Amino acid sequence: MKRSCIVLAAGVLSLSASAMAHPVKVFVLAGQSNMVGFGVGAELPVELRSQPDIWYDHFNPDARQGGPYAAATSTDWGPLEPKGEARRYGPEITFGRAIAAAYPEHRIAIVKVSQGGTNLVDHWGRGLPPDPEALHKSQLYHALLGKLDSATYADDRALKYPDEVTRLDNALARLASEGHEVEIAALVWMQGENEAGWSAAFRYGDTLRAFIAAVRGDLGVPELPVVLGRISDNLYPANGGPIAAGREANIDAVRAAQVTVAEEDPRVAWVDTDDFAPRSPDDAYHFDSAAYQVLGQRFADAYIALASAEGSSSASSATSAGSTGAAGGGSTAGSSGSAGGGSGATGSASSATGGAGGGSGATGSSAAATGGAGSAGAAGGGVTAGSSGATATMGSAGSAAGSSGAAPVGTGSSGGCGCGMAGGAGPGSTAAALGLAALAGLRRRRPRGRQAG
Image 1 (cartoon, rainbow, N blue to C red):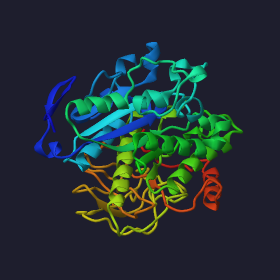
Image 2 (cartoon, one colour):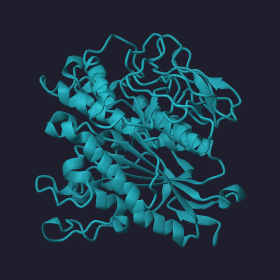
Image 3 (cartoon, rainbow, N blue to C red):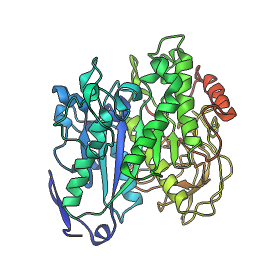
């Protein structure tokens, strides 16, 4: 490497000898408003309010119109912390902390581009024309990838913001200018609430597959790990959600597609959000602050499980579709936390058991944990700070990856990862049909504990 440090907004951070010897692991976080996040920065544990050891580059296209997120836009790499005047955050805060704890030999960097009220059909697909009804939401694929985007934008598809500083290409260029080697580690995607309210729901699986394939192709990483957040059952009108009665099948379709896409691709995982408390009684689209902390941990657990399975030749297969969370005070039949079978993960110091306690709202079953010394189980109503408190199940490996690092106290277990399974679970398959039927059965939620609030 040419240099041993990179200049950040907060000053100059030196790289350790260990970090210098390994590439910077870059994670791409993207999606709509639950990736933007409504977490309140002042409610974070002190140690999570600013994390200068994790590099962060953030863009919300609301800034194109000078909206409330204009002040949240990065001009360079900076510490991982809540952004903007409101000091809001999404899952990136605890995701970054857990990943850094799991990979101490690497510098961790996060690029996040997210915008509320966006969909794959009009806003995130590769090569789309501007959306005349929401120009600032237009062409987000290009806003994210920039020069890495292989699409041609001409005539009616001309870029609406041609001079915009795009995110991933410029972020990678800044790392390269400092002499850093880079590994694009994963895409983390939290989106689908928009399509759940209209007819695009019924082709969500196809648009999501196309989006993942485009990102992998343009990044030149054909097996790029992808972690999906399945949209919450808070959306159902029977649960007090905002989507109109009569459109429950739309919600079913998006949720089933997210599970199916993960099950048919061994490099894709999904995580559950059904146990998250809504932000407020009149805002069931979004989660409360504590839920975003748990969501970040679940995303991290799912990625670690994918990465662990890639390096394991002895892992056995398991599926999480329509699985039942472990019994306990708040689990719900059909939620995503468990997977059958699975060999023990290698290198673990102890086993972590998710969802066994009363009142935690956890949805996991036990699996061997790897990657983090001292991983903690989720028995009872809260995780221990410094432990993952979670198990992440994998379709291509029955192992689970735990990670040390700060976890929100008193918010319940961070269990709830479901992962993809290789094989023939295509969009028209029996597995997809059964998944849709199982999801329809969850429209009316059983009373249960909540992850937070």
